[in-house]
Length: 271
Image 1 (cartoon, one colour):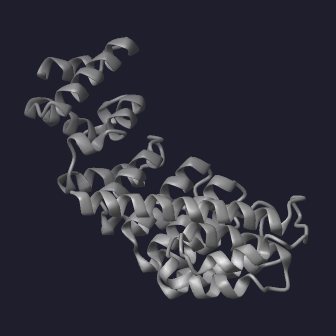
Image 2 (cartoon, one colour; image 1 turned 180 degrees about the vertical axis):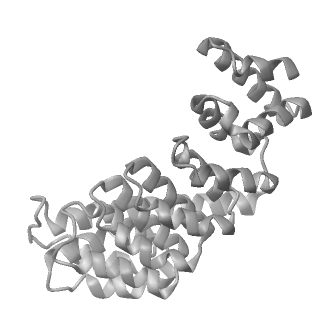
Image 3 (tube, one colour; image 1 turned 135 degrees about the vertical axis):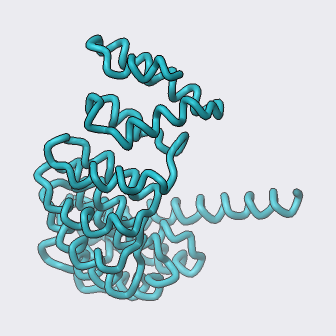
């Protein structure tokens, strides 16, 4: 496997990639030598092509642990190397609390992929100091970044984080397609269910529309009666859809979730 280390810096891209594939396959089999070489890619990342580094990081779970924290933090702060997005992802996978300040800085990166990865990592780390910066990203120009920020706030899940999600949903400036906000609010359902129920009678049909979608995703049986009532409403929203359509889809989602839960319980009882 040490021969593969030399091949990783070969001039021929295919030789480099083949060496990396062999190392990853070895790590998957539990080969200690392969894992050691892969760790050297992370710790000495500046000696390797960014493609090799980023592809190795994609499968860090095969060989990495918190012993690589210092090297990951170095790559996360390295603006010239160009792999901050991948370093951010793995800081999240390893839940490195020490990475939080750098990840918060990365929320302002010009590359949308880097901003998205920073959001996802902060959600994994669940650092409450990230709540306000993540809330600001709810206005990001890229929808996938806004969605990642909303999901991260739901993962952090404290009162301040949830309030930011509500503020964004109820704001007249909310995006036309705010499905990621309703999905985020459905995620910590223990904290948001009562307010989602109240939102089904909100004056704004847009709020009723997205509240219905969120209620369906909770799978909570208390939502069925309300959704059935909303399914008879004809109010139109900016996308051209109807509150009734959202409620009908939510009912279908709700019933499917409950059905899967019943099957899962039955399997557990049988086991």
